[in-house]
Length: 392
Image (tube, rainbow, N blue to C red; front, side, top):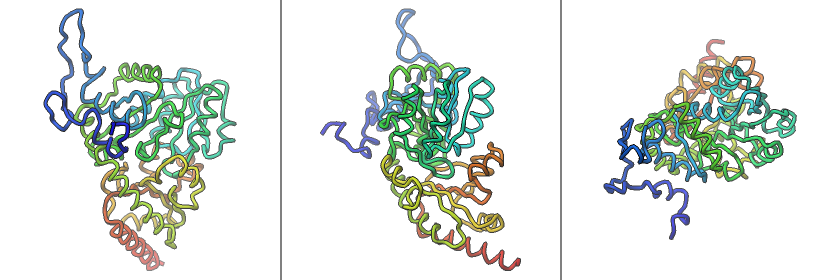
């Protein structure tokens, strides 16, 4: 059996960095050196300065490129560093079309930074292809997708948007953080740049801050590398090692978390105090069929809205198991409040326009017993409801 015959799960462990060729160690060495000795004035080695290239970071970049089916991966100091550096492929006077309920940090980058450099933007509901087409301008150079979107879990038809972009010779980016290459491979659908906050599911343990970008086109990869080297927001070697360690268990973590998420979504959907559940694994999700066509599962993130703000606050105070925190994708379940956490950079008027209400919670489902999580949520909802009834 050749390496190409291995399943994705096996390739997570058996890649060219499965052991160190010099020592046989079954872990990539962490090379802390910032600079490297050169043989002579006329002969420079592969590595000279760690901002430009480091053996440990290179191993992670090789691994994510293989996972996504790309030719080149690039590792950055955070997900936003990967996104921001990729945006530098644009120039003054360019225009970008962006998913409307995009991550708050991306919204801030587009509206407060790119705009200062003469790069224009239009936010659209990318589930509506007519709206995407209507937003195209003569200077549109990029269509930016986040699918499923954060936090409303809207699904963009990747191949359809790629087709629109090719008609106008524009680039396409996809933030693939929620799905990971285990569940979705945008490069195979024609996307130009795939982006990850590897802080999330790829790292998987809430102990590293890291970002990744992957491309299939070699020339584009060279351009993005030049930006990475110039801008300098590269990933440190210890964080690179932590992400590589997390990747080894990606499939088993995602499988368990995803199965838990399906059951929790079904429970919440039937609960009388829950107004709405956003999860692509539910058959009544508006883009259920599209997501099933382009991904291998719904993932482990969902969001839900409670009936009112009083109930919402009581629920958050009484729920016990999830960490109430920023971020997602850890082994522990993480409950977040988008209005004041992930999307705090977005003005309230913009959040309301996008349907990000003040009673919306986002849940990244972890590896706990799903029965324990459901019982915890059920008890917290009961306590919250009873408390409000007593208050009259």
